[in-house]
Length: 71
Image (cartoon, rainbow, N blue to C red; front, side):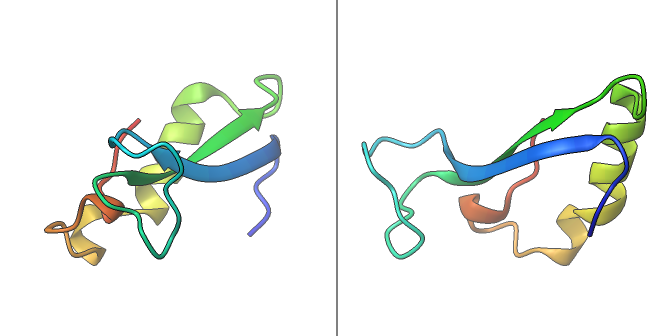
């Protein structure tokens, strides 16, 4: 999905204790995404609104750290 104002994204893992987590061995990490955006096109509040409108904790199994929401 293309969102006007978002210029770059990069997926990875945050938190956790292992040095090189992978999808197959995520351990105690959480999946994350780094978002670069143009604030002249998309404000930070708009970006946050878009995130929570499209990534709701209600649609994920919150018993797994992997799918937790965070900003």
